[in-house]
Amino acid sequence: MLFQLSFGSFASDILIFNNKHYIKLHLSPQLLQQLKELDFQNHSKYTNYMNSVVNNTILLKLPYRYKRYMIKYLNLTTSEIFAKDSSFTFLEFEMNGVCNIKEYTTISYKLLSIDG
Image (cartoon, rainbow, N blue to C red; front, side, top):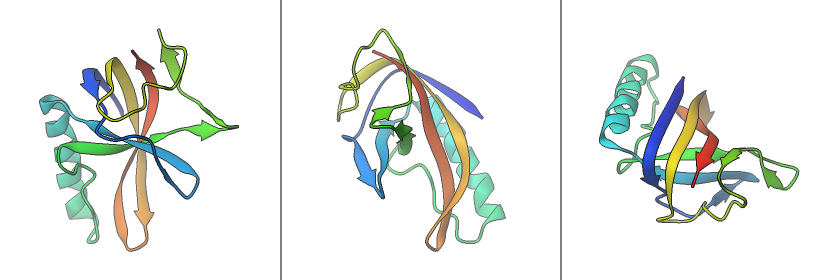
């Protein structure tokens, strides 16, 4: 499932867990409603489901391999945009699937492209 967001900002700097890179994304009201509906649907499927939307933000995985981000940059030359309160004009991400983290189940999202 593919999602697009115009004119948004990040809620955190880059977070690194187990050598994987993530960033928190502020959600627009429309996108917030869509993702909350996905969370609601998954609560009925999984008894240990944890909401992916927390404080109107989600955690986006930044594909990172060979010491670089594997993201399509539009009108950007560096990854400096990945900082708290940094804004962008367009962002595209996908639902990466449902994942288990210790005793919890949640949805994983992955960033595909960004425009400054």
